[in-house]
Image 1: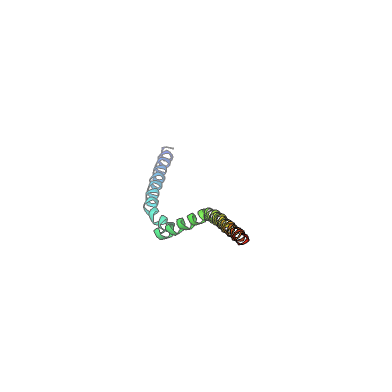
Image 2: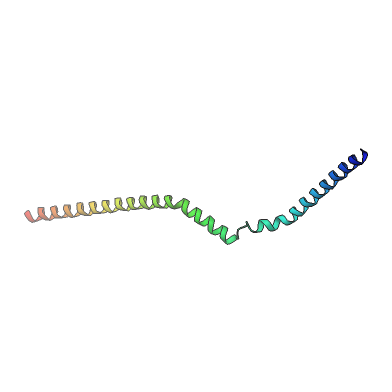
Length: 99
């Protein structure tokens, strides 16, 4: 009976030592495993640029719309003021011709 107890204790101790050694071995080999999952700086930079570009696309489109609307409004005001000036000039010319 004492032999069985010593064998169980010795076997448990050997299993514990083996588990500790395997754990240390995995921790040493762990950085090489992560290298395959890593990304180059240029790839990361391209990924970030693409994501930012995708995120600001709606904003750029909205700014373009607003600028177009503002330019259109400015153009209409210029055309209206030009036509008003021409009509006032033509009415002045008509009134001077009538006199």
